[in-house]
Image (cartoon, rainbow, N blue to C red; front, side, top):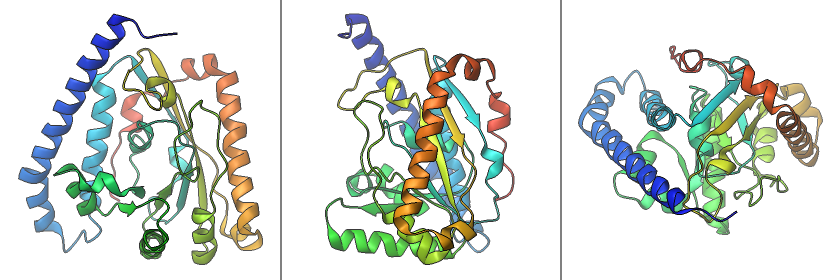
Length: 273
């Protein structure tokens, strides 16, 4: 179905609001949050405070657009004191913002071009997110070394192992990087299911859809014992099959999930990292 003129007008308005909100957040980041971080850097060398501030930005995006309803499940399965490898399916530009609604610490691997955006990209680098130039072997090696250091420093790292956004919402094959890192560091893997973001804004378009239900669900971690016993290929397939199965269940039971929405106040609790 082709977008109507009203869809174009609404999307332009949405982008204006989103950009204005982002610019406001960036301004506060450099004028207020960065000086605070400089004061507390001795107690917060991993810039956890700034990551939580990024969570404010992401959650605010959804607050501004009430047509997008967020259903967050399973965030209690993530122990704030432990390190993990998070692996999630990838549908949309909104995926990372949706995962921020978990209010959990992580550092994610992002395309290197994002880090070149003035102020926004500099903020990403400051927080400690990890740049990657796809297809560049040197960049991949550096990226994985940084990710390994963070995991060993008790900081979870988020991967989108499909490597790119799905065009139609169906999952692509997983790449091995996240699972190789899990084996090397003997770290638990946490599969995360995302659904609905690909409907809110589809790949290769700037048109927003309204009245979208977005589901974020944290699945049971794959234990260190299983990480030790299984091969990289097996871990990759176990993670992918769990996410795919739950994704199919969510789509079949959308009405049930819509009725069991978790109040925003429960998904926005911030405790000490």
